[in-house]
Length: 114
Image 1 (tube, helix red, strand yellow):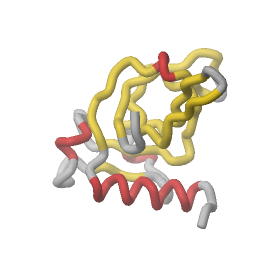
Image 2 (cartoon, helix red, strand yellow; image 1 turned 30 degrees about the vertical axis):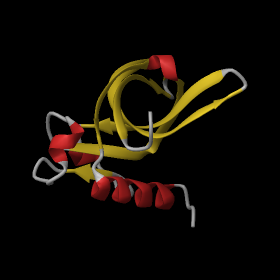
Image 3 (cartoon, rainbow, N blue to C red; image 1 turned 135 degrees about the horizontal axis):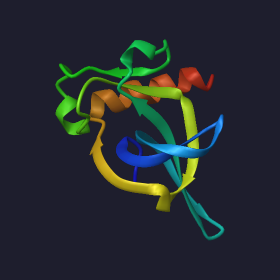
Image 4 (spheres, one colour; image 1 turned 120 degrees about the horizontal axis):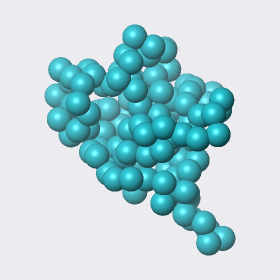
């Protein structure tokens, strides 16, 4: 998996011991010490809850078909989780180059990185 891949995963929630099935965008994959983890940003079709540092993927965006989202989706840069790679159910699609750039910039703003 690489940055920008869109996967289906049991996304963990802070207020619940179990996760729920959600699409998510790969931030990075980590390996080392025998672990294979993936850092993800949750995606949601509840676009009315999209915040300033989130990325709205409109269904009219020219790169929308690459994502394989069913409808307009908000990538939540404030909803980040690290999961074991085995929690990823399948790869759905990918962010195109322009959406990936927007996602990377939004992550930098969210995490207060230069």
